[in-house]
Length: 302
Image (cartoon, rainbow, N blue to C red; front, side, top):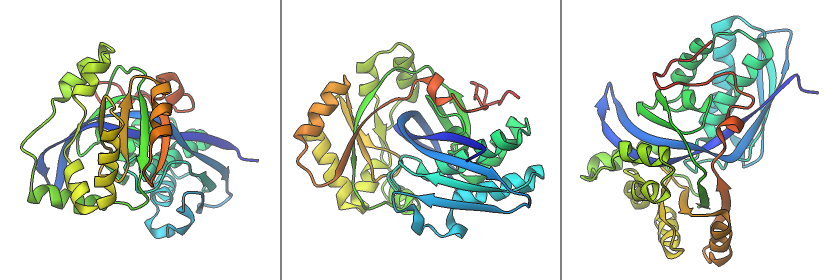
């Protein structure tokens, strides 16, 4: 039996703008939402301070422990708060290397499950710890609809609405670092206006949301990976309201009015890549097992 268990949800970047650089990092302005695909993170306490992480599914068993953000998250939690360690099992359903935030979700899930296990009550410190592990890991602590800025560590919670997607999932990943370098070599002069997208979400204006879907890393990802280029072409052929790469790829999402239309598009898809119909996660579900709620001022309430 596990002493604690949490769900950690995947995300989709509805928009992703590059806002400049600072300190060797790219600055972003991105509107994100949680979708109904999650990894399940389970933990048992140990009598010592060791963190053991066992991965299951999606090829995650091949991730070396020294490169696994979930391991780093567990070790950082024990070091920061002086708790005992844990044996942690992660059952993955979020595809690896798809731009859906799987690595960050696992790191955030480990922080959440250890907080549930040891109850430090230090949500603000855990958010800072998450930010040190990855640019969107702090957002992944709570998920939901949000606007991310800075390196992704600044989180503004947003009003949301039900959205329906068909995911097209090439098996080959895109290196995030290479994707940013490719963007720097040929930056997109166009920008989406994230504020318009935020207003459309608040007004539950689906057409307005669709008009402002954009990813500055989409074109570089397609240049680096022909599967991404093919997935984008295939998405366009299904006549969605909007479509784009999520994150730095390789996953592509197509936005439709209803789940039924997503299922129709899936049935008409003739490409070679795996597809999946998903919806946004209602806020109460995204936060169901999560002690951290991020407010508009990026402060965590303890």
